[in-house]
Image (cartoon, rainbow, N blue to C red; front, side):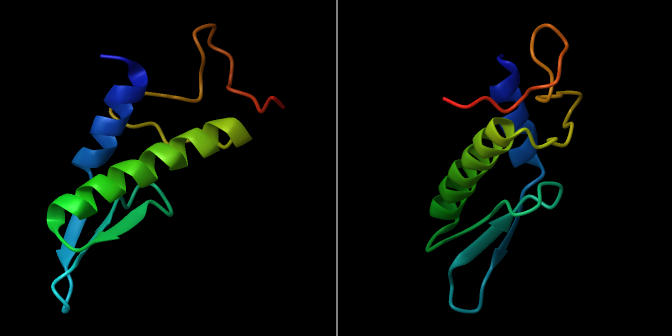
Length: 89
C-alpha cells in the first residue's frame, strides 16, 4: 500500500461521527485540526470527510506544513529522507 493511501486509511480509522438533532451527521478527525465534514447520511458524511482529508493533506504538503505522523507514517519526508518543501509551479 502506498504511504498516502495508508495515511488516509489510518486517519479515517480515527474519525468520530455524531448524529445531529436534525438527523444529519457530523464527522471529524480530532488529531487533524480542521478536518471535519457534514452530510445528510452517515455515508455522505464519510465521503465528505475523506474528500476534506485528501484536500487537507495536499494543501498541507504543498504549503510545507508539518503533518502529524499517523500509524508510523510520516508524509513530511520524501524518498530521500528530506522534508517536503513548498515549490512554486
